Image (cartoon, rainbow over all chains, first blue to last red; front, side, top):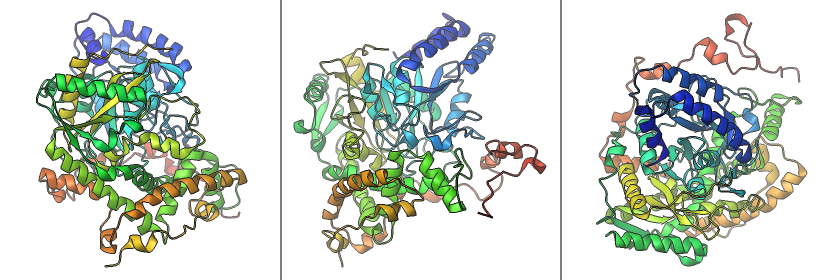
Length: 481
Length: 127
């Protein structure tokens, strides 16, 4: 049982009062957070005020009543500052909340704070932020992964019971893997993006990050569904994910193993060993393993960094110093004001990606880069969907390595981009995937695996992960903070 | 049919940091230009592997940003048009409309201006 479900039970049985819990919670938050820099802002006074009200209520009926949930700093909360971890949005306060935040509020959640992330979610290590890198709570000299590194770190460090992240190319799953927690990227169209700062609109998805599949199921059930404010959210019935958890045992489950993602030479030895042990466990539990092939996935990184940057160059053109946040003080014309503001406000990685996207959309290169990338993207999607006709889920590692050292890859963007090699193809295909812990390396750093399923099969993913968790009983990592 | 790949593959790329930065409304320092030039060489060299895959001009034309989601409508047997909002003002999208106070909350200066509907923006006309 994860801490979300456990805490809910304690509140419901009145084993602990809200005020009592939150007094200790806030003390801990304020003591631990400076060590890992995971929250950019703590909502301590809001939390204590909400706890006061909750204690005076007679009963709690909502599914997330009084539970502390952290929100990534690209998801709007009315009247709270929203920066996307960028100087360019300093001081910006959205006029309304994102649809997912409204849904969580209706379900009774209490927002513990907004979490650090890579600037405009562009990064794999949470080092591209204007507010200092997030440190991995299990090893303070290591990255927490990105871009939802703050959300992963606060879950791992027990500074909330669940968090929202966003995943454009692996931004929920990679940090979940590096911090030893569970994170789900939903089908494109499952969760509304309204009120979420856009990086790459055809790839971005909001998703839950928590201790385990059961806790993720509780959050996903609340945030999913059609939203008239987001035309890409789809009219597909939301399943009762927590009720489905026992419906997919490992026995008889057909698990596809993509040969392109399982090459031993592409994995660190300890990752390779934990993956082999996981496959052994699947077999022991009666799952049917089958090799599948995704030949175009080898082009995933190249496709992703053309499609995502093209969309980013368009989405980020709105940050011009006129409407939001930072504005340059020195300028000579309107154009100069915009250029100066953007140059001062954006960090290096954001500039790099805007320029790459601008180039791939520019006259003479559009077909060779952007259209070609979209064409290969279709092939990647077709291969995933064909493979998923033969199996129930696909399994592969989340990352070829454990959490790397802070600063290790910051000078080499291409090496950093390759960290996402096992995650980006899934975003390109638009299908759901869940990252979960499968063990540790010899130094105690977590290693993650992921299940991938067909569109809108989040229930199957959560249930398969739940079955694995019960069989494997992977312990939690030891915190260093 | 002409293959776009055969046309582009192997052609030298012309990437000018200055030109692209100007298109992107960015001013770069000399140090940034130098760093980006080297990094873009690596990145574009890497993404150029896509040119190995043949694509016709007709296939190129059919690629839209959201074509990936169309497949889901097909798989689930959903009619894309049926998921669009009705053409009516009586929808919950109306809740997107802000009050004057909401709309001006993030403006650098709005208080005290007539009707609170005006944002203050920097004067650029005389510059």
